[in-house]
Length: 327
Ligand code: SF4
Image (tube, rainbow, N blue to C red; front, side):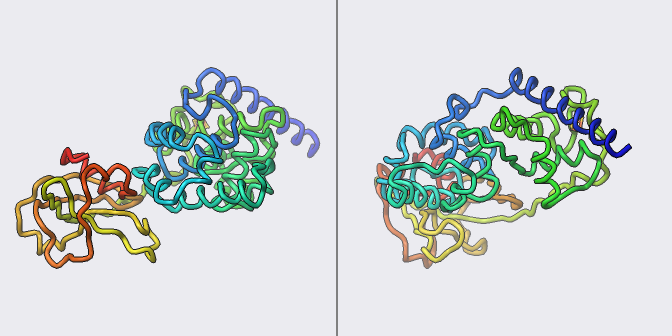
C-alpha cells in the first residue's frame, strides 16, 4: 500500500514537472536576463530582483549592464559609481555586496566565478536562495530554490501549511533534474503570474488538476497592512545648484546616499510646492516638498545640477528631483 502511494506520488510529480516546463516554454515572460546564461548577468538579475518588482528591475538592469558590462569592470569601479548606477532600485546594501563580491572574484579567486551553490554562498550578499538560483540557471546544478512565490505555490498544491525546511525539501523532490534552472524559474513564474497571492488564476494554471486546493487554502494570504506616514523635504535651488545632505555612513539604511533635507512638519510653514507618494516596504509615504531652505540644516552641500545624475541619490530624492524637472 505504502509502495503504491509512493509510486502514484512519483508519477504525479513527473506530470507536474512536464506540465510546468511545457507551460513555461510557451508562456515565460520575455525578460532581458533570460537572453543567455552568463553567470555575471544571472547573478546581477537575481540580486536586483530581491525585494524588487520585475518591471522596476528591467530598465535598471540594462542600464547597470551598460555601465558595468563585465564583472571585471564592476570590480574595478569605485563604490560611489556603483551606488550611482544602482540609484533608484533601493536597498543599497545589495549594491555594496555585489561590488564586494565582484572584487573577491577578481582578486582572491583569480577571476574564476564559483560554479556551485556551495561555493557561491561564500560570496558577500549571496544566501541560500540566490546561490541556488545562480547555480541552477547558469550551471545546471539540480538544486531547488524557495522564495515567497514558490512557498505559496507549494502550500496551495499540497493543501498543507508547510514552511521552513519542509518547503525546501518538497521543492527539491519536485526539481526537474534535466532542466533545473528552467524548473526553478518556472516555479517562480507560476507564483508571480498565475498562482498570485490574492486571487490565483486557477483557470489558467497548467497544474490545476494536480492541485489540492485550487486556491482555497484558508488564511493563506495574510494581507500586509501598510503603514502611512507624512514627511516633508525642502527643495532649495540657487542658480545651477541644489542643496542636498548626505546620509551618515553609520546608518543601516542607505548610508552615504544623498537626499533633500527633511523638515519637521511644523517647520514646513512655506507652501507645499509639490506632493507625491512613495512606498518603502510596508510604509506608504505622503511626501510634501516645500520650496526654499530647510531651517537649521547646515551639514549639507550645494551640488551642481549637472552632477546630480552621477551622485548616489536615494530613490525618493531622485523621484522628487524628477518631479520638479531638475533631472
Ligand atoms: S490551481 Fe490555482 S492554487 Fe493551485 S497551483 Fe494552480 S493557480 Fe495555484
